[in-house]
Image (cartoon, rainbow over all chains, first blue to last red; front, side):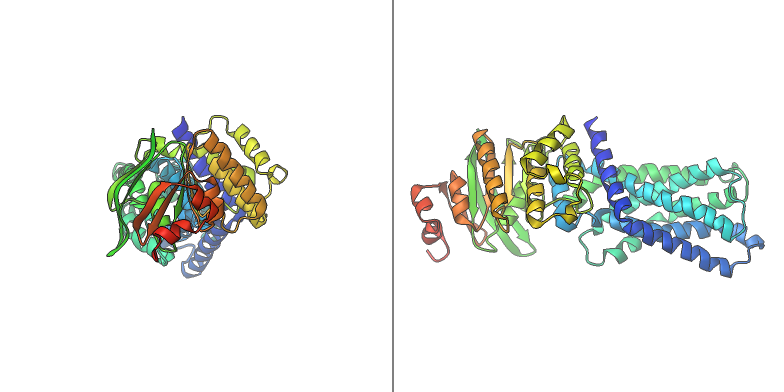
Length: 226
Length: 233
């Protein structure tokens, strides 16, 4: 019970801080909408190509804008040496990680929830045909971004060039999850269910989430304290 | 009962040895004034005691365990160089967050108590960033004490405190000591520290130069330890 309390205290603290300042949220949302808008000038809304690249476009937008949120995860702890106060507290490393990953997940999910309708309007696409499954796939892929981003956020928090280092570290690692999300999102936006041919991508996403959540939960304390 | 024990502690930053073969032991209820010039290794030692850093060689035990153990950390209170509170949260939210992280059983009641005790109850919903320096420092003190720690680590706690915050902190430390807690504080303000201290530990360039009980001579002449055991001695 105490463990869950600590996880939720951590997540609640991060969400409250971010929703109050909206520093990362505003930057991330503006960035995502601008990319969607710029690409809408490039791609013909009626073309077949648009449907084929919809998943790729969306997840590139989420990956780029998401790092702005992920960068703030641990950087938020730097003023007033709050990171020291956290590490000195009895919260286990895994609870600290899970709390922060949950907060990052919610914040990226907010960006996605706004971007999907914007994408539908700008690109004249009906994207809601497979909405429940699309939400499930998005949740899995967003958790992949949140876990990896939170873990590497802990690693880069004391680096001067952390805004640059974090994307450089997480994008290569995220490739399997991003590829799976892109394939499945393209399929679902086209209104098709996940068939036997594509179920492998769902398994990739689930496996990615399980492996990296477990790895990060075990390693984060070593990363933070050494 | 030994509350604090260090054995052969070395800490390297690259090739530089910030601590060299430091060892000591203090009983529960002691108040240790950790003294030393700038760069002597006080903060490095306190960070190792607080579990924020690992010793390169040797080890420390606090309250019978490793400071990285959650059970030990839950009994340690820390005031470091930074105040360790969140600017974008209110005083109440800050304390509630730390009370929950420390597993305080009745967190809301503990928050109320410490807001009253630090005279911040009337601004409990004010954001920490809007507070004066003195108010922020009192909030940091409340944060460090909210879980009733049995071991306190204070790194230059009196630096830049206003007189009200100094009086508050001294009162709280006296109460904690009377209750059997152990305190380690590093400071350059010798008079304040020696008034509280039962023991003195002096570091010179990472080496232990002196450890022992605080004497009447030290109290009468706060520079006595430096004069007899400092670098120039």
